[in-house]
Image 1 (cartoon, rainbow, N blue to C red):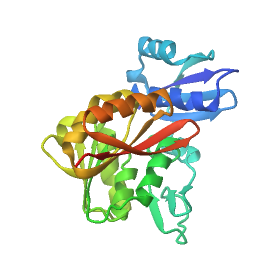
Image 2 (image 1 turned 90 degrees about the vertical axis):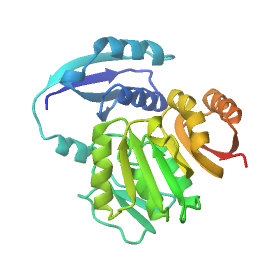
Image 3 (image 1 turned 45 degrees about the vertical axis):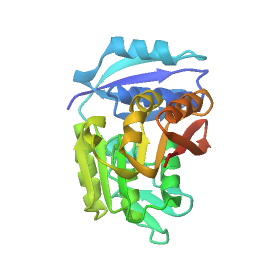
Length: 280
C-alpha cells in the first residue's frame, strides 16, 4: 500500500496540543505517527489523503499556536518495521505490562497484554488509554458483561477479560480494528471477546454491566443516551478521549440528562477520563 506523509512542525506547539491534533488526525484516516523535535510526522494511505479535510481540521484545532505542514509521497517500505520502532512496552499502576510480540515477557507483573501494533492508538501509550486501563485494574469486572465501544486494537476488551469479565462486545467502525481485535485476542489466549463492525446500532437492545468508551467528546455526546439505555441498573460507564474542564462539564450535563451520575475522574497531562453510574 502506498502512503503519504505529512510533516507537522511548530516552534510554539506544546506536547498536549500535539496529542490533541494527533487524536483528531486519527479520526480522519491517519494511522501512524512519528514524533520529531519540533512536531511529528503523520502517515495516511495515499488514496485517503484529503487536503481540504486536513485544512479544515487545522483551522478548527490549531488555536494558540501556529503549525506548518509538508506533504510527501512515501517510498514503499516495511511498515511493520516502522510500527515496531515506535512501539515501546509500558506499565500501568505497577500491575499491568503491555508489550508487543517482539518484546521479552515480564512475568513479575500481575497482568500482561500482548498487542501487535497496527495503529498508534490502542497500544496503551496515549494518556486516555492508560487511564482507562487504570480504571479497569480497579474495577470489579468478575462475571460482568462488558462493552468496549470504539475498541481500536481491543486492548481495553482484553484487559477486561483478564480482570474476569464473562463476556465482552468490542465495537469499532474500522474493519482493520475489528480484525485487529481478533488477532490480539488470540495472542492473549482470550476467547470471550466478540468483535463487531459498526457503531451504536450494534448495542441496541443489548444489556451491559460495564461500558468502556475511549473515543472523543463529540462522539461520546452523541452516544451517551445509547450507553445509558444499554447499561443495567447501577451499571458503570467509563469514558475518555476529552480534556478536563469544559469538555468534562459538557459531558456531565449530558450524562445527567440521560440518567447517568458522575462518580469519579482521572486527569493525565490535561487529558481526562471519568466514571458514571446509572441511576437505579
